[in-house]
Image (tube, rainbow, N blue to C red; front, side, top):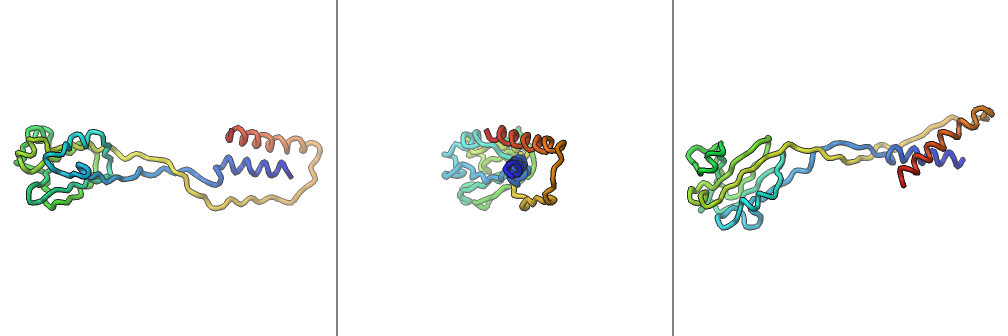
Length: 176
């Protein structure tokens, strides 16, 4: 009986206690551009963005005074570097804009005010592919069924204990 309990414990340990591993998309993040100070010339947006990782599925939240500023998305690195605001891909003017990052690649955001852009109110966003993390979920309860007890023959007595012993040792190795 004791070896049967040990075997059941070993099987449960091998099966992860009824848990299985599943790949799921990494958590999506909402990046508040500029942190508490938001989108303003006196805030060093480039420093704020330099330590961040942006992935597909994340979103940018940009807050600013709509009476004084707006945000544009530019189509090229050249437009971004020179603050050429003449042909933006999109303009954001609400004062609180949520921008989903739906695809991989580099996107360029700048102040719609040429002077603010030249003073550094701009930043590129390199959007990386989503990563997969692994989490475990609960399986339905494991139900073991066995036939009733039988009288073992002398030839099967040792063979019946070897798998139990192996499984028990394997469980001990896994836990220690």
